[in-house]
Image (cartoon, rainbow, N blue to C red; front, side, top):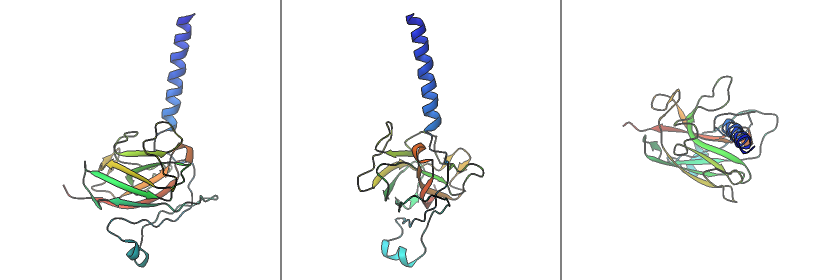
Length: 190
């Protein structure tokens, strides 16, 4: 009887692991959400951002989410393999998000962003949440978070040295992988 219980336990653990892996990658979105966000890079300052053009992420939905998320990325010119910092504000402390360097163009037929690095490699992608076990960054009560990643110029089907890329924050599996905010980034010549 203990052998069958062990086999059942192993099978149940494998099934649960497969389900968790299927719902936790930072590359899927159920429904787009309309929002416009002012986003500053370190090459802009707050006073010049309002008088010059700003970057924004805009998508549409029937049920907009109330967020005014901003990302400040430093350094402005990324170097493959070097550290990059995302200073993020306006997050919902009860929500869940991913932060990564991603393709600026959405995947046709699949709104999940293509991002650099390997999926679930939290050196190049971060998971922000206060309620999910395994999240890599906590969100402060005031909705701020600091994310430090390794700037990675390439990913599956993505090369940010030749393609337009963005520093992106998007919802995690509990948030439907929706777009939240993004700011253009470039990689410095090696």
